[in-house]
Length: 299
Image 1 (spheres, rainbow, N blue to C red):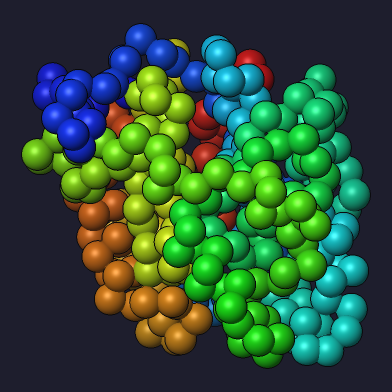
Image 2: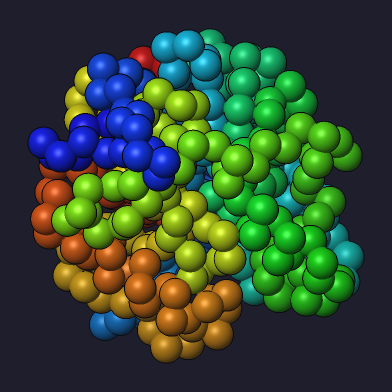
């Protein structure tokens, strides 16, 4: 991962970034929901617009295929048949076909489920975890805070937090790897984010904290032959938000885990766009990268 001429360093002080390790990236969406645009973008339309449930497939030269989230799956509808989880589906109307699942789209691209070595979870909202059971051989990477915050909630509180525990595999904890246990990196002094986690110890994929929308939420910094990307999860819902510094409507703050942390992550993203324009920021629910084919390549 190359950000500028200043090398990144492990927190212990040793240089630990190999800029020669490039990955391949392809973006997908597994279903979508609709909400009025103004909720996620101040000054936006009252008209409902689609928000794709984005996920990414990253091919690492040594680690193989890695997913960033999974989008929706048929299991989401099974888990939201009964009250109180049915409220989730009522508030968030989802459009999904079985062929939209991460598993089926990847298989169409020649990647069977058993070839997925890792799934990195940005956070535990259902539109990011619904396909986990389709990848029984994958190790699961996430921040402990992201899981512990929702795992302790009762039934109604879980629904309010967008968390459906039935979406997680029965052996979830046995397959888990904590992001916090990977090498921590200090990022360049002028970079908007101070530190990250070197997930595979080679500088190829760096997890960065973007809390606020959800506790323990992370994004991924990576570099392909086409350039550098920051998969920012739900730190913003659209590209226009960080380009024009347009935060969500105040109503949207009700569902945020920590509105102040959200504001901080939002400001850092805006600065990243301004000072590092070569790094392409990919929000998980933005149509623009999908329509433009950003990030498409061999996987």
